[in-house]
Structures are given as structure tokens and as C-alpha cells.
Amino acid sequence: LLPESLANFSAASRAFLVLSEHFSDTRISVIKIEPKGSATTYDVLMENGVAVAFNHKGMWTEMDAKVGSVPQSAIPADILQYARDRFPGCEVQAAKRDGKNTEIKLSNRTELMFNAKGEPIDREKEPRDD
Image (cartoon, rainbow, N blue to C red; front, side):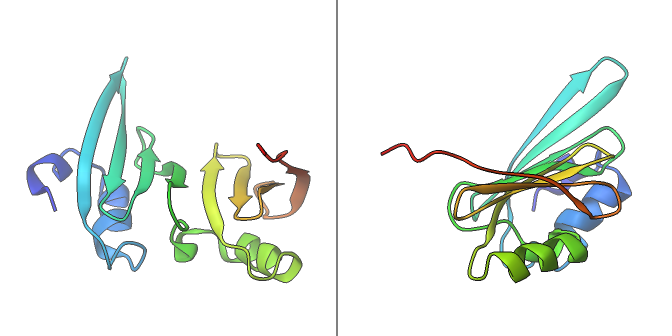
């Protein structure tokens, strides 16, 4: 880990990266601190290739796995269960949340949107590039 860089992180973001089970099998590779007016955001790249963005409150806003999947333990349980029930064998490759909605992208290219209660509100499938 990079303790000198983590000193600026909120307790919530430090706990998410270091103390939780989400990234217990990997370490932080790069931290990018982005001042935005009175708020600072943080982008973190883990050694396993998962990128995590945090807002100024220390909550993750985006996770993206360039290879494999984001930590399934980091996805809200009701959303993960919905995806597993309807798309067996698919992993969550990316997730975004804005405080109201959570969007996930599955390994079969399906994108699902959920409201704050974890209820599905939208679904689409990306076209293939081939």
C-alpha cells in the first residue's frame, strides 16, 4: 500500500480499499488525487487491474475491471443477486453509482440500472464490435 497517499483519503474510502474483503488479494498500484474546486476526488488503480473512483465524501462512484471482474463483494447484495438470478455465469465488470442509481455492466455486455432501493429500472445490451 501507499500509506502516505492514503492519509488524505476519508475513513470510508480507506476502509473500502484496505480493511474490507473487496481487495484483500491485491494492492494499490497508483493513486491519482484530483482537486475539483472545494471537493477532491480520488482515482485508484489496483494491481489486479481494477480501477476505483471515489467522490469527495469517500464513497466509490465507479469501479471498472479491464480484465476479469470487479469485487463482487463490493456490489450491493440485492443488485448482485438480481444479476446472478437472471444472468447465470456472468460477472460484474463495471459499476457506477451517483447517489440515486447504480449501474452495472455484466461480462455478456448487458447493462442494468437500479434505483436507490436496488430495484431494476433499465436494461440494455451493447452491440458487439465484430
